Image (cartoon, rainbow, N blue to C red; front, side, top):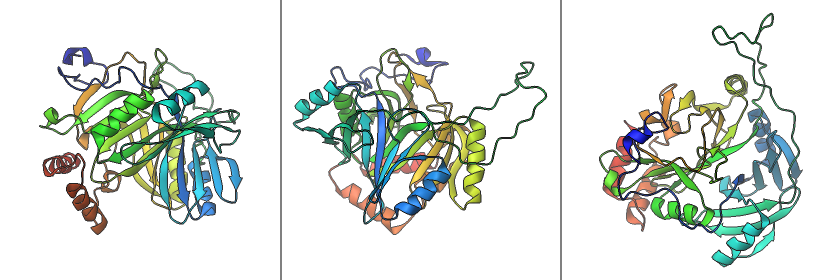
Length: 372
């Protein structure tokens, strides 16, 4: 698509001739959404305290697992299983139909098995090229809707929707509505991208590339589900090339900006640490606020994200820190993962010696992007 065609859409630039199309011609299946995320932590009681403060509700609790949910009807958002260390296990995507699991199992040489999700269901276990366990599930039952926060009634200029009453958003947790997306870092970006497009039928909303090195292809992708003419979140999965391999953050939708701000005040009063925010992104347009849980996993409250149908082609933009937000405070080193440490240095050296897509030129390009 030409540059002109992208003006006033979501990116000033489209693909050049011969660049990645951002979708597969014949995917195995097309997943409908992100189902939930799986973690392990040694202290489930501490994890539950943070979860309630952040705005989750408890869907189910056993001695060895904590299932968390939002207020919307559907699957849970997260399961935290008891483990020896705190770690991210992997994402679980939601199949549109039970038959999709059979098709996926045949294509990948795996089996369909029972899912240990509240309400029951079926699941297929896969491994992506980065080494992340990826599961695709179909739930037998949807969790029922819970009472949620109502958006504030706002006055706009001469459009007066609220009279003879005041605004007093309560200082309380920003009630999570649903899981929105997960962001992963990988040393094999191109291979992983191809796998998600070919296997799960996802499509790219936006590509980012290293400034001056567009000819080497993208180094980050914001990827959505292909629901045909039904608009889907701008990104359900985002991935970027880096020296590490693992979880970066996950994002959870809340009602509006006041829920983000009041929920953030509530978290701050309880001693939790904001990583970055409040602001509004460029790719995806979300209002955002990022926090660290007691195990230093990053979680995001967001509202007002973009929705794209299948006919919107990928945008292309250079990768830069300044390009992360339309407004808000400068991105922190904590958010960027740019705080120097011996562990980070070992990670970089391991990546440069390994069989992956990171080389010294790309590493320097990533460092430049972090500081631009």
